[in-house]
Amino acid sequence: MLYICTVISKISQVLIESQSMRLSKFEIESIKTLSIRHFGSGTKVSLFGSRIHNELKGGDIDLLICVPKESQSTIRSKINFISDLILTIGEQKIDVVLDSFDKTDNATFLTTIRKTAIQL
Image (cartoon, rainbow, N blue to C red; front, top):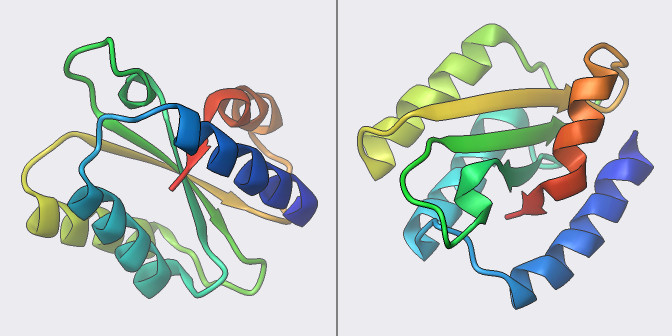
């Protein structure tokens, strides 16, 4: 699973250079900073869904958060992350999918997300 997140990271960097997303630099930095604060230093965050397409309007912020195996990611961590993010960037609809490197549940759903996700 660690390998998959690393590959996504490298591919995403290329995509970011060639494709913008509908998040400000402030929003991106806030998401990255808060994800590390709530889930640990090895955390990787990717954006997926409608916000990766500049031609679309509106839409919520869909985040895939790959958390390290040793992270104590809990529902409370997820709620605190979303709460802090809303306080920082303002009221918005935010969806968070957690992917710990050792879990295999939701494998089909995660595979679908990874195909288009762009790492922040």
